[in-house]
Image (tube, rainbow, N blue to C red; front, side):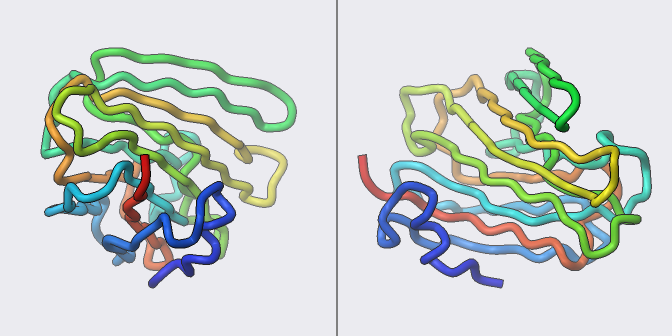
Amino acid sequence: MEIPIGILAAAGGKATSYESIASAVGNGSSSVITFSSIPSTFQHLQIRGITRTTTNSPEPGTTFWDLTFNSDNSTNYTRHRLAGDGASVIASAETAVTGVRIYSAGSRGTETNRVGAAIVDIHDYASTTKNKTVRAFAGMDPNSSTNDEVTLSSGLWINTAAINSITITIGSGAFATNSVIALYGIKGA
């Protein structure tokens, strides 16, 4: 499924600044989506997704994505979260973890026809002199009095290698069949 370019322009750039690289649709049985052979011709990358997990486990344990780069599953990532649910605020940080976590990016299987949404920016992904920074805005509303949340997440991959593949793993279960994740390249300085 392609996301219309006109929608992307609202994120603060010209419509021509974004170029579709790839998209993936959940199949109900895989917990992993990988984008590989990413060209190094852009300044930044952006991931946009609407996802739901197949599991009915309590949240928030099922509603996140973990991102890893270049098949690196070592503990050289950090992650941060600032979240609100209308009644309380959560802040957390972790170091020496095995991926950048994007919180509130999905909803659980019992929440039929409800999905989480996320926009993830990966800065200077093709640089070979910088560690890679990630920032994300995500949220979900299961139409209940609990488990709705808006989250700002950020992270760091402590590695100067150019990113040529991104693996996205959902917190629990598999990506439900109505899940869609798209990868875009961002041109410019």
